[in-house]
Image (cartoon, rainbow, N blue to C red; front, side, top):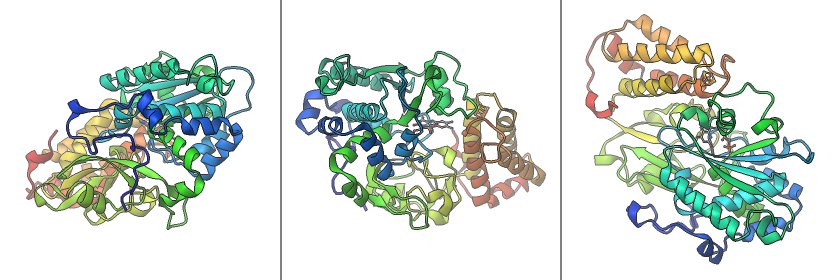
Length: 449
Ligand SMILES: Cc1cc2nc3c(=O)[nH]c(=O)nc-3n(C[C@H](O)[C@H](O)[C@H](O)COP(=O)(O)O)c2cc1C
Ligand code: SF4
């Protein structure tokens, strides 16, 4: 069920984009002429609490990975006490295979800024920090220019939001990450903005109560905030027509979602779809099928941290229930990397294990040591230099690390746990063939990285 009318990307002209040099960035004037900042205008005539309630009722689930309700998170803030309160916008986007926030910033930065302004007003947050991935040089320039334009046009600044329509004034700054995956974890991000090493903090206290510089802070993903303006502008009934109900008794997955598809498909790209679209439809319709007509073998669900969808899960609905339905951690960023029949899944596991080994910040022993051991063991298996005991040991290490078993400070270790565990369990025969030192009919070179 592709969207009839793009919601988040309606002002992005070339879709999917094919020529990066021909890109067209929507500036302030064009944004306003196509209805931009109308939702902010409407929001400023509402009570802040009303907006929070609206976003909560819309069940806008966080698009950064965890799928937590944005409106509910906003209610965790303590009452205003006259001190600073912050909004941190997470555009770290370092999850392998994920490139959807980048598109919003690249082409339509004011769509994000409008969401930021509404969220700040709703939650009475006076300072926003747009935290952007270090490697996003071009996007940082685009966003900085858009922020400057927004100041010049009176959206932000001392006069109050939207040329003083509200007395509530918001400052907006851009902060470039030094470039580590862990700085995308919300409390690692706070440390990074404070100028420290991006080490995640132990929670509680949660950032809503004690966040940036010890003050109340909301952290939301870029795409989550981009969805706020359409909700305010068009209302609940409209929003709930998009996406899907749970189907298995969980919270609904309303709204559109940007899905960035990479890997062995004919036309990789970012597609805006209703939540709940089956992966097979996404691949066959939008991405024009598997590359060279090969068979589907599996897909990383939505960033490597989520684990893998197996060969029999091609029709998995891409909604926030996918974790419970398909034995993966969750929908994550909804950016799948697709693998065809020639892929060596042991090499895929080794590649992912290397990523987590390199990116562990080292604070927690199970993650720091476990990630290194997982990488060593998988490398041994890949090189036909392991016994079946090593395979058991690999699973034991993977399952004992993370927030879920309660052994680490942050969820990076759960990502490692799920990625490795699901690959081993769904493609076990390939691993067993390696420990028994038997060759298997796959193209080893195809997925070495
Ligand atoms: C290791 C790690 C990396 C993360 N990286 C990102 C990221 O790049 N962008 C993001 O929005 N969220 C990332 N998250 C999730 C954030 O911690 C946080 O949940 C999210 O920014 C909240 O925004 P949302 O509720 O709007 O999704 C990461 C989490 C972990 C554990
Ligand atoms: S789980 Fe890993 S990345 Fe997260 S704080 Fe602990 S050591 Fe650092």
